[in-house]
Every structure is written in structure tokens, then in C-alpha cells.
Amino acid sequence: MLINLISSTIIKESGVTFGTSGARGLVTQFTLNVCAAFSSAFVAAIKPHFTFKKVAIAIDNRPSSYAMAQACASVLKQLDIEVIYYGVVPTPALAYVAQEDAIPAIMVTGSHIPFDRNGLKFYRPDGEISKFDEEAILNAVVAFTDVSELPELTVNNKAAEDYIERYTSLFDTPWLTGKRIGIYEHSSAGRDLYCKIFEAFGAEVISLERSDQFVPIDTEAVSEEDTLKAINWSKGHNLDLVFSTDGDGDRPLVSDENGNWLRGDILGLLTSNALNIEALAVPVSCNTAIELCKRFPHVERTKIGSPYVIAEFAKLAEKYSSVAGFEANGGYLLGSDVELNGQSLKALPTRDAVLPVIMLLMAAQYTSISTLVKELPQRFTHSDRIQNFATEKSQALIVKGKAEPQELLKLIGIENIEVDTVDTTDGLRLTLANNEIIHLRPSGNAPELRCYAEADVFESAFRCVVNTLNKIQAL
Image 1 (cartoon, helix red, strand yellow):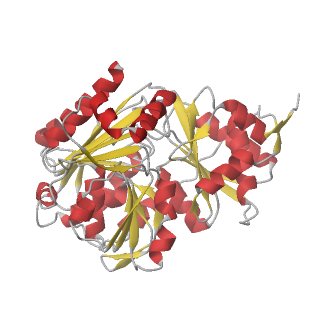
Image 2 (tube, rainbow, N blue to C red; image 1 turned 60 degrees about the vertical axis):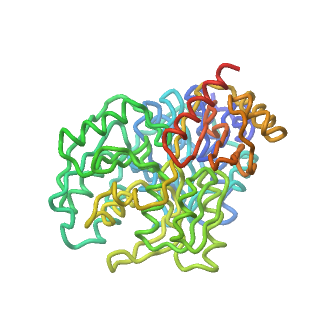
Image 3 (tube, helix red, strand yellow; image 1 turned 120 degrees about the horizontal axis):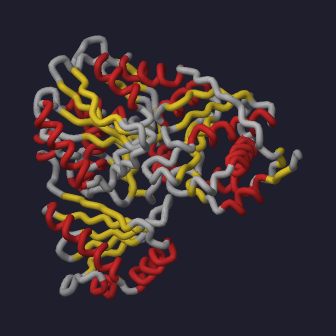
């Protein structure tokens, strides 16, 4: 029987919410009608501002993603909107082709979170949706019919081809000849594209650990197992670099020539320097070496999440000719057109994993990656998380820390050190009198509490995170 459903009601009852990057929740929460409700509400929210008859859709390699895409396509058909399905491609590939065609897009992905969760990420014809758009989607009232028949989706290869061309067109010589690049493929949405890009540059590509099971790689909390893998691969295959990404290919994981993973914000710093970026927007959690290196005329600190970084671009573009941003997870957002190798590279204001690794390789043509890192101000960061930690508990801890930061320090086992400054831009970031930084923040995507630490010595940052999270878990 056909049932008329209302988008705002379905969304509210689902329990699915927007996090730092898209709507995220358990797969069991993303029923077919919930996917349809979000898709129809998205169209309604942006229709007053744009004219379009097509919507692009792509997915990651999660087991649940294809059916979710089918549900999105089904309701769009009800709305007389044509769907272009690009299959499994990285999120930035979908964003780029949609930007070039000036149409909206929906990416079905949960990024780095476990396979029992998933999500939807939305793009307007002019780029990522804003926090204002998120509210409009949640509150849109759209009637649609119960989604029961799911259409088969035929893959269009244009997004994959255009994404490869975006980067290979910048070079007319095999400038990576002699380089050996290992690609840790696992279940990354871009695993079939990356080898084509680097081979086009002349590099020898070694495929590493492709997986038929979804692997939730978090580029901000790299496991000890993956840390050892990269070192062993580097030695065993004589690699110049190991490259990987999270599930949807918008956050890079890149090693130096010794297999040591680079922190995402250090990679972003080196990328921005190689691109001669003038103004940066970066989340408050990023390493302070960004300012200490004095290579950028302006650095704007934001809340954590790509929408907040992107929101600063227009303002920065009024004063500076080249604008970009990056996050501690390594995702790089190009906020303005730039010239690279004598060619024009168009802005792509969404997280991208490929541009950073290309720029790192360019910067290391006449030196080593480890040397580039050592030349930066030596500030070291570490981060980790407590999974399955109730959001309410995280928030209560943050409230207590804001009211009594010194007492919070005692609670996590730090005594005889004064709090110098308190930053509440996003979560709670305490700079101590000894110049160390502790930052606690509930995840916006899952019931997790993240802890970031920064110090002049890596061991101090590492120890701070481990001790802090252990103390909190024991409370």
C-alpha cells in the first residue's frame, strides 16, 4: 500500500543527526525511508536557491551503501529528478564532477566510522552544504511515498575519469620516474583510481593489502597495527612513500620514506607551503607549528569540521589571492584557484586526499620527506579516542572543565602545573604553563571522546593522551 510520509517527521524519529561532516548514524537507523526523507528534504532545502534537474550520487565500499543509494535515487525519481550514479568513488571525485556540472550531489558514506554505521553527505551545485543548510534539511516538510521498490543503478565512469584528469593534466612529464609508492588499498573508495594517477606520473606502484571487508581507517587515530605495517612495507618494498585514505577517500594517510605516518596537519602545512598559500583556515585542534613556522600571512582558527573551515574562505578571499584549509585528519580543502606547474588548478572546497600527497612528493623531489618535517618547528601532537563513550558523559566532563579547568587537570592526574589559557572554540583546549596543550572534544559523528595533546617532545604528547583517556575511562 502506498503511504504518504513527511520528511521532517521521519528524520526526527530516526535519531540520525548531522555531525562534523554529514548526517551519521547506525545502519539500522538509515532505513530506506530515512534515506528518502533526507534526500527529499535536501532537494527542498536548496531548490529556492538553485535550478537543477539532475542529482549526482556515489557511494563508499560499505555493505549498506548501495541500498542506501538506491533509496535516495527512488525518492528523487518521485520528484522527477534524474539521478547520475557514479558508483564507488572518493567523495572529492563526486564533489568535483558535481561542481563542474553545477548540480547537487549526495555521497553515501560513513567515512572512517565502523561498518555498522553509515551516513549521507550533501553538496549544493556550488559546494558543500553549510550548517544553515543542515538546519533547513532537518526542518523541511516534504511529502513522499513509501520507498519499497529499489531501482538498479547503472554506473557512470565520468566522476572517476574527471578526478584522475584533474591531477594528471597538471604534468606533461613522468616526474616520479624511479619512485616506488605503496598504496594501502584496504576498502578505500579510491583504491582503483590512485594507482592510475601515480603511474601516470611515472612512479612504480605497489598494491598493499586490498580487502573485501570494510576497514574503518581513522587518519586521526592510527592503530599500532597500521603504524607497524607502514614501517615494514617501507623496508620490505624499498618504498619512497606509503599512501592510504579513510573509507571515502577524502582524508589522506601518508608516510615518509621510512614508513612513519605524518600527522594530517603537518601534511597540510607542507602542502600549503608548496602551493604558496597566503591565507589558511584550520580547526583549533591543528598543530601550532602552522603559526610558528611563519610561512603564512594569515591563519584563521575554526571549530572542527569542514563546514566551519569552508565558511571562512569567502572572508579570506577578500584580502588574499590564495586561500586553503586543512584539518588534523589530513583532508585538504582548496579554497581558491591556484597555479601549479604552470597550469591552473581549480578550487575544490571539500576535503581531498590526493592533492596533499602530490604536493608532498613535489616538495621532496630534491630532499627527503623526513627532512621536510624536521625543518618545521618541532611541536608534536598525538590523539586518540575512547569509543562507545556516551556523549552525555563527554559533555558533562567538558562542562566541568570549562567551569574549573584546574580541577579537571587534577581529575586526569596532572598536578602542580597551572592552566595558562582556556580555549572553548570546540570542546575544551587547555594550554598549560609548561607550553603543553590538552584538548578534549566529544566526536560529532559517533559516541566517542577524543583527546588531542601537543608538546615539544612526542613522548610527552603521547603520554598525556594515554594517561588522560585512561583516567577518564576509570571515572
